[in-house]
Image (tube, rainbow, N blue to C red):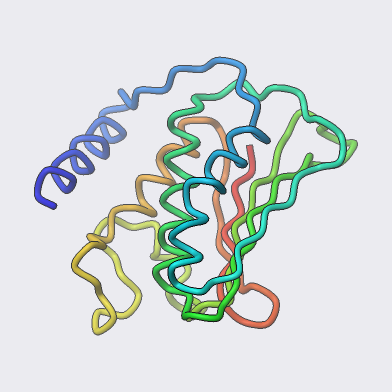
Amino acid sequence: RMSRLIDDMLLLSQADAHAFPIHLQPVECDTLLLNSFETFEPMAKEKNISFTVSLPRTALPPCLSDGERLSQVIAILLHNAISYTPSGGSISLALSSNTAKKPEALTLSIADNGIGIPDAEKKRIFDRFYRVDKSRSRKDHFGLGLSIAYEIVKAHGGNIQVTDAPGGGSCFTVLL
């Protein structure tokens, strides 16, 4: 746990120094999403959570990005979704193109019907060490994951936001 915390802190200090390591190359985001789905599917099944993935019908062009870093963002968001969604809940992972205006832009979303995030807390969840409900804090969550995801998305020139999911829970949306 200490090693992971130190690695996370070093990563964030690189972001502060504007030296965040991003290695851009063409990445097939649909493949990236499917790989993430396959990685987290056993965790969801173990907790009796319905887990689905939705991809566009037509293949999307490769996205100039750092595939490892985008995988890290997806992993952070999926790990949180699984952690805060009760048994019997559901999580959906989706990828789409951002309309005809900008066909090269992509939207990635992860929605769950878990405990949700109060509106007053949504502005702070990307802050370092911030956790919504201190009484629900888990020992394997340091409050750094969402700030790391934010920095990765920002380094890609993108945007990350959270809204309420239909029917309760949270929906994290990454715009690239």
